[in-house]
Image (cartoon, chains in turn brown, blue):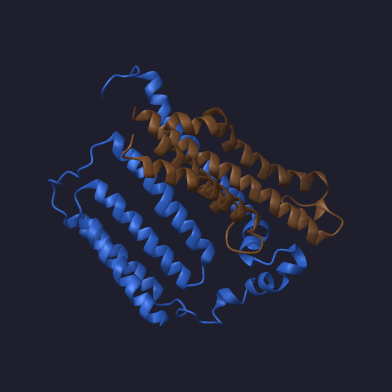
Length: 138
Length: 183
């Protein structure tokens, strides 16, 4: 317990900033490097760091297995659903210009939705994979 | 300066690759592969491909290292010595490498501005991204909008891979071994 004190305190200090950085990478992806994929991996990395330091139970309190496993198909559904919304509103599949009167703004919204879908699927998949490996190893 | 950085990074990449091949302890292989990914991320930053570098650092050096270490927890961590001779694999590897090098000979040289790929749709993506999508980062607008179908496919690949691995890891336990039994 006393030997990993630095590890535990250090992890506690880092965790919120890792999540904040993931959100920055997600929402600043329109202007700087990054996007849904990178943000999803960093989010999963936060959960994995928590699990490595404080144990699987602590990680599953903030990211329950049932939630993580539902995120995997949810993100793909959000992505594909954004495309279907374009179809329903009378344009091509994945044509985002229908989401607003100004086509450019519609594209911006569509990119936002699609990136959110990628974030959810990637974060869910990476975390669920880690959970599956850890549980198999017990 | 750039060429000096590139020389150092590429030399280190080659050194790490040889070390990975010679290493018998799989734990060492995983750590060396993580170092390889970080070096590769640095090379990509030098190439100004920051988005790709970020992916390489987070996926290659981060998550895949963790998942490979978790895999080593399930299996033995020392690579067995092969009993068969290495001649056929060596021939296959050398042949494939030679074909790849031969293929690069007809490519335009590195950094050529008037290569075909820079003349097709890339200029339109670069000049019209703000007008058409309000997104200044052309990488994001190409990824999520101009090439949205590809990214949908990629996301589906991640979905499929995740479901497949989880079925493999969790399904076998439920059917075969009861909890707590040693394999």
